[in-house]
Length: 291
Image (tube, rainbow, N blue to C red; front, top):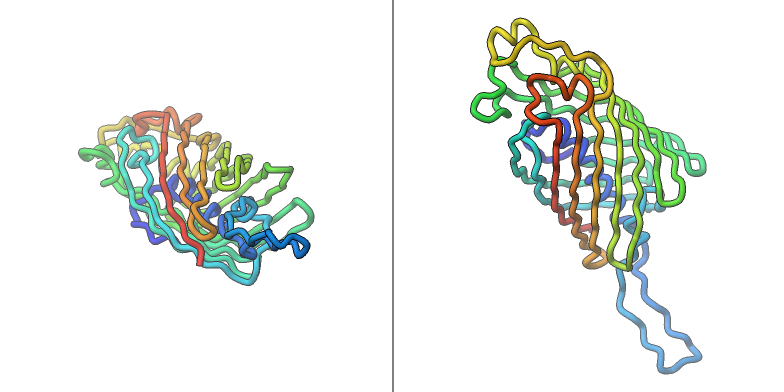
């Protein structure tokens, strides 16, 4: 699980899910590639190992029994979903993949339960860190109360088509918001050279009434204690996200990754009086090492 402070909002978990998946996919167990000299050419000399972009490709790459990756970095993002105040948060992480099926990383646990050709179906266990009144600047969220921590259980289905992966996830939060969310998107990963890889991701998230109430509604009781007017957020589209990642393979074991993205709050989430700005930018820089 992520070694993150409990106050990190849900979008950190979502955005870091791609980061954690990058870390796991970044270091599939593969042989250190060394060119074998041609026996008929006495002048041929073995070349030193070079990074293999295939090792940093999608999760479909075949893995051995286990992997362990450690790393860290920082993310610059809004202090809560809808905030116009940006803050920097340190991000340490540890991740492992066991038996080519089970991934344990900062976002939780993912089990690939079924695979057939390009199709994968997996089971998910994670968490929702909730939201604290203290997340707002100068008491902005005072009177709204805290959204408690909750455990997420869900599933993921994905289909690969060339360098693209089309995916959908659904997660139910037990405790906290007691909400249900679905996310649908496409991710494209493409090596541009032996050492440089870029990735594009686009997704949209829908949420049920429980989730929208917890994070975007203002009840009559909350309105009496806070600066906000009463507001009811119904189920529907919650946000759309777009991101660009760039990965540089320093060696076979070391990699550096940068990320820039933007989220756009939609529907009743965007219209909530709690929201200071609908546009939610995000920037991150990470370093990872595979043992």
